[in-house]
Length: 163
Image 1 (tube, rainbow, N blue to C red):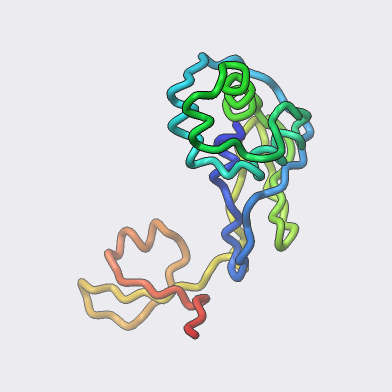
Image 2 (cartoon, one colour):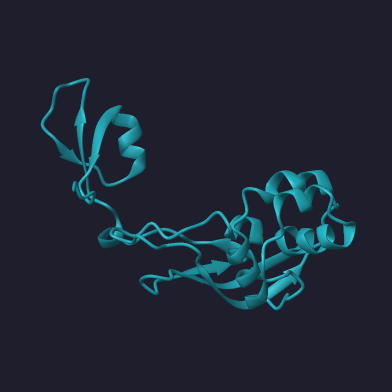
């Protein structure tokens, strides 16, 4: 799993309000060379949560990124040295084995062969009540997103709290 992917993941357990950034417990980190593309890095920079990237890179043994985020205007004129460090952190460091940990609950999501398993247990999933508009049926509980798509329904998330 690349750090660019990690930077977009969060914990979606029912009731969690602070599921980002996931902490990394690295057991095996590998470096895989990727073609350098400064335009891609400049484009992606605005989408990256900088503090999360720096923390994740350090947890994987890479401490070359500055603590404070460079200004977006600086990125446009950034020297190649900085962009290569950013490139290495985002695209070339791979978490092969380890875990991602929810900062709020401590729940560990395993990473095996570079693939994070973010599947939730049944008790961690938000309850949803859905009405099948095709049949006018009574509300039914939907257990999987696949069922939701097949029913072409209107769903209400029961875990939401109305002020």
